[in-house]
Image (tube, rainbow, N blue to C red):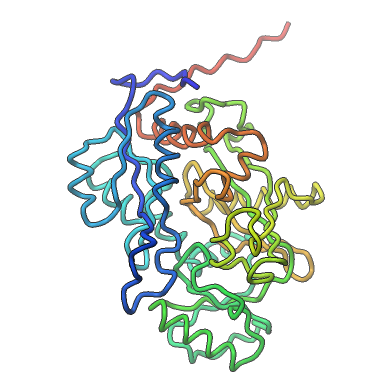
Length: 371
């Protein structure tokens, strides 16, 4: 596919793909959780992204998002960065690379500093959503582990690290049924991950995830303006994550996520989900509102689960959704509606390029006159 945009200054760009890479042969350092690098990417994913970008004529390179990045990114001098970096630790690690690029004045894809910092903090995200009248389950953050349990929290409860992703710190023991189990799990999370524990009502209903692409002016920079609704956003098909037969039944854990699609012990990824139109409408609306309220840009994916009465509750948002073809949730959703992987990657790139002034907006046809 060849883009039909007029690119400012250059026909093709130098694009740096920024990410943190898993090293299966490197032992996890002492004192670091065993799943500390679970959300890092593989070189195979990087090569797929680079191939997609190069398919439209651009030059690419891969730069590791570690302490060498301030020098390597300036040496390469990219026109724009394709950022999927998870960061190297800290309570706002997904904001590290965007902050560096902002400092250096280098354009990049996806959400900016503040949104990436907030979205990794599940407690803060829920507080913002709750204040904007979006549905979340009752929750409480534990800093020490001995805080009194709020009276509106009833067992069973679910315990997880407050500032991690990719199911880190989540397994079958994350569901607790009494005070003793709660205190043991909360203290384990705090000690193991060196961060607060988030405790919330266990949601026993079906689990879904919904991807969002675009922004109000997306059609001006998109290679596929037909994808977008009038408001400039594309809602991907709703995917259901059925964990009933996974290695951690009814818990979408890191161990379950690590399984290949279709592998024994993996969840069933059902897309489009078999749901009533009214529920589909609600889920897409909540994902769209979750994206807007946090100030996410261009792409995100929101996880939603039903409570025991069948009401949707927002769980968390991923402003750096995985992009491994035929594996990552967003890619599976795109594939389900016939969007090719290369087109998805290029769309994320060009939406960002439009925001950073690297593309001329396409001309919009004037409305037809009647009579």
